[in-house]
Figure 1 (cartoon, rainbow, N blue to C red):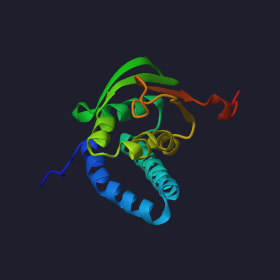
Figure 2: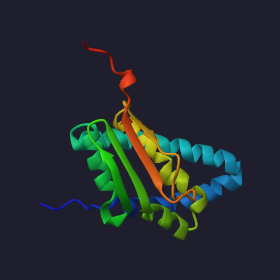
Figure 3: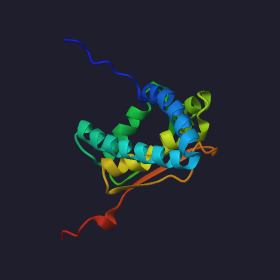
Length: 163
């Protein structure tokens, strides 16, 4: 039985970027940069939501511990250097101090759309993964900050009181 061909998420994003980048530039020249960015962001967010659902299914659940497993998959190939601040059943907090995704977009000359292609996915992904988990991340390396500050929390205000 043959093994499936598996590539890291970083490799997948590079392949996508090498195709999407020139397409984006061509569309921006035809319909304008702003509209092309809106369309690109919308498509990437929808793909991320779908990816979040698929990730929860593949991990057998959508709890905070499952999200922690997903983050470990994002790190494959040394794609992210991160420091975990807190990890429990209701909170996952970490800072990304090095992001090879951001480095790759810069190297490809796509720094101006790197945030749309990568950072833009994070909130939408968690919506698909578990809509009861909220993400707060005001800083990203792609936008020039010293880290990406990921703060995931269970949104208990949406849970019904069962007592």
